[in-house]
Length: 325
Ligand SMILES: C[S@@+](CC[C@H](N)C(=O)[O-])C[C@H]1O[C@@H](n2cnc3c(N)ncnc32)[C@H](O)[C@@H]1O
Image (cartoon, rainbow, N blue to C red; front, side, top):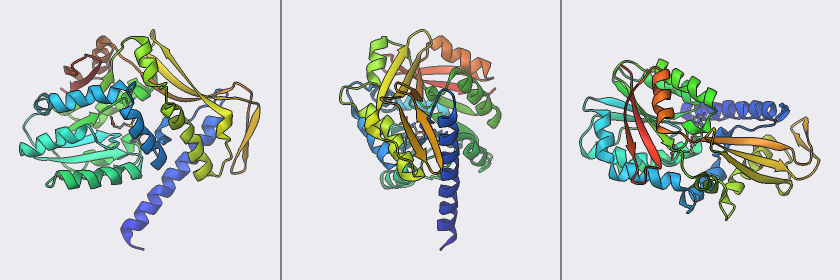
């Protein structure tokens, strides 16, 4: 076995150990929860591709509008000097592709460093980007955001530009978001910038429908995490006995996904047993929505200067540009 295969296997093993630890701790809590960062195995990735195409799921279309039609503005926000472009939770890079192509066509000097916990997505991303942007300098990092970011920032002395698109930052509670932005600040230096996607508050029904589609793809996406636990952690969740339930609270801007146990049941995972009451819930994911003031406030209180907001034509979504002064 060569060194690269060995490292990849060790990495997958470490991630699988964290997966087990997080699942056991989430299911042992008084209010059960699972971490949404494990949604994206091969099946989860395929289901998310379908979600992005749904008429109800406006988020991808809105941010795509920005990346396709305001590419020059995004490039201007980055500036002229050579830089490293670090993308947190890059996924399949559908939107960043347009910026990368623009930068490459305008002879920008940069290395693209996508970070994602899913090795599967990173392999897909690297293959596609290399095929479409021939001279792209790309270096992938598989693992958790800041563990990988600490490695990425050490790759060169160049200016850093951090991209965090879609709803990634919104998938954290208010407290986690604050802590995340403060950590981001600590990893960067004066002159570095961040471009962060925020879904803006809008009609509550529009938001709720985006996460509760009529075809039930979002439900399948949530249930897939139980399948993944069955497959990878030797558990026996009966998927027919759990149902997806979605809420949105316009006051807090929190859209929350749950799975509800339809009966009293037990689930075994390796040597452990977890009991569920009828109607007991597992909290799966939060998708937070922001006002423009929430965003400028968050930038300032984490130490950044808020530079500008780049919005889609409907003004439903913004990519907000922050700088370290
Ligand atoms: C909803 S997808 C969005 C992808 C992309 N940012 C976009 O806007 O299209 C979220 C991505 O973030 C990754 N992710 C989630 N939590 C992560 C974490 N803690 N560390 C690294 N990657 C993470 C997932 O694997 C997934 O690929």
